[in-house]
Amino acid sequence: MSSQQEPQLDQKPQSSSEMQHLSTRLQHHPYQPPIGFDAVEPGVHHASTVIFPDVATMRARDWRSKAGYTYGLHGTPTTFILEERLAALDGGRHCVLCPSGLSAIALVDLALLKQGDTVLLPGNVYGPSRELAERFLGDWGIQHQIYDPLCPPEELARLITPQTKLLWLEAPGSVTMEMPDLRGLITVARQHGIHTAIDATWAAGVALQPFDLGIDIVMQALTKYQSGGADVLMGSVTTRDDTLHERLLLTHMRLGLGVGGDDVAKVLRGLHSLPLRYHAHDAAARRIATWLQAQPQVAQVLHPALPGSPGHAFWARDCGAAAGLFSVVFRDEIEAAQVDAFVEALRLFKIGYSWGGPVSLAVPYDVQAMRPAERWPHKGGLVRLAIGLEDAGDLIADLKQAMQRLISTD
Ligand SMILES: *Cc1c(COP(=O)(O)O)cnc(C)c1O
Image 1 (cartoon, rainbow, N blue to C red):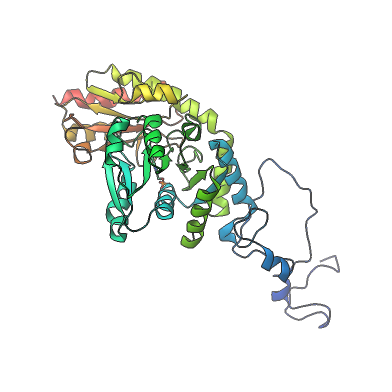
Image 2 (image 1 turned 120 degrees about the vertical axis):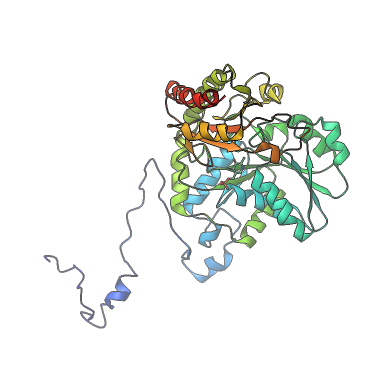
């Protein structure tokens, strides 16, 4: 203890008039770091309470404005930076962050729908989004209708009633990977004055620019490629329209949706390498998907960038790249138990949900239970593969050794 300015670690004030108690001094620091610090990564701000310089400033602050801060739930420099970067990435003007991709979907539904309204969902919509409509929105008097994601625009037009208020699109849809005619479906919705929202998680702001196709709302699970680490959950909702943004922001505030600064920092870090990772996942996935197409055990590979995949022509028209996520359908005679054994025989591919991370993943799905029989003619099992950042040749070797399980038992 050389310096006289060193704080005393006893509870007694040095001089009752000058020095406050230790417990007080620990909460109130006179030190302010010099301004002007700059670094590659922005600082991570943690806050529930935001401190105002005076009462007049506190009263004048508008929680909706990004010109100032009011409360941690309404934004910190850290969350504002990610929102602005994502809005720019998507070609939008406004962005709100949600604690998961699913909560971002729920935010769109709850902001745009009320009792008596109907929402249109594609038959290949992300499963929990359908669950939300079936088991939750229905109890609040909001109906949903399922449409065929590959239907021509005229067919969608026939489903629209005066109660229809929102059209959800997903490009491509989950698990069965059909790529819809985004331009055609969006045009029909606009003609009927219906809002359109897209779950663009697969495109991740890299493969597709949905606002250029006339979409109103872009939703993404940042959990996937934007984070890239398989270690954080977050979602975003981006808009170009000020009025729509206001509706979303009010609902976001009323539901108390917030994200933590440390999680935001992880996504900000992931964003730097997003295009590099996305294109690496894309190249490896296309090589592996093409190899799988040639295997005798495989009936079909569902990858929008491969000719013959459902909606491939729409992918070729609207997209400039593809994600590392696709599905493999095995031949009818291969039994479900063999497919499970194939998944368990994989060594580099791990068994687990989600995608967009560094490690490759495989999940078998019971599609017969998920899709109407007329849309799903296959009897064989389906495995969804998420290609990570391992070497594509090593992944093919892994698939090849696991494929032995599918022949040997025949
Ligand atoms: C993962 C996913 C979501 C949900 O994201 P979470 O952050 O896991 O809630 C939504 N849509 C699609 C297409 C997804 O793959």
